[in-house]
Image 1 (cartoon, rainbow, N blue to C red):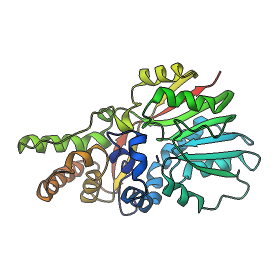
Image 2 (cartoon, rainbow, N blue to C red):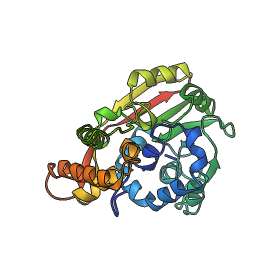
Image 3 (cartoon, rainbow, N blue to C red):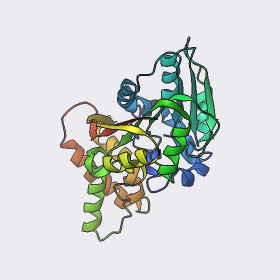
Image 4 (cartoon, helix red, strand yellow):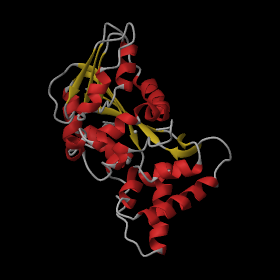
Length: 302
């Protein structure tokens, strides 16, 4: 489990929305139902939107032929398959995720010629003990939902050989990223004007739980990792082909979904219109985009 253009949307979506105030152990049981179906329906579009983050991740990971790689929170496996291609047939790759339906879909996609064999494992990487001696652990937005992050990163460290490395992408705090925070701000403004109560998740929970560099460094060093390095990036990611489409998508994802889920259709429509108006004030023409700030976190095992 780790988020749509095409008919619009929701790269910020199901993992950042349904689990916005939960951890992985709270979300694992629901993937056989609507959440899994929604995720699978938007997988290709989501990958198009998150591809720039994958480029950052793999540039930092510098996988080499013959290496053994663990991909945490691999979902339908786009980063897992890329890792398999980069390490080649002499290497080996394991993709681990709590969402069995996503892994079943991943296993149906054929590997590229010359790629490493891939093992798909349905498990919580925080407690999984089925593998070891990896050269690298990678993840694109798959490590932010651990119930006990310190224990989880320690467990991942035990899966890595001495001198092996960790390279993962996380989000910055929500309040630093307009792509997530603008919809929340519009919802709050509307709610205040109309005397409504909306349950906005805190800005440093769920997908944003590893957005504080100091906390991340403390977690990793406490879990036995060394040479921790965090590199923040800023990029524009697509939200939709038009302002109305982008607004509807934004309200169906992330903290915004949590905030409006109990409002009636009249209020949701009004909020969508207000958000579309804000989007209309952006650059003219083309797809609506929002500013995001991914962080690439790297560390080494002694």
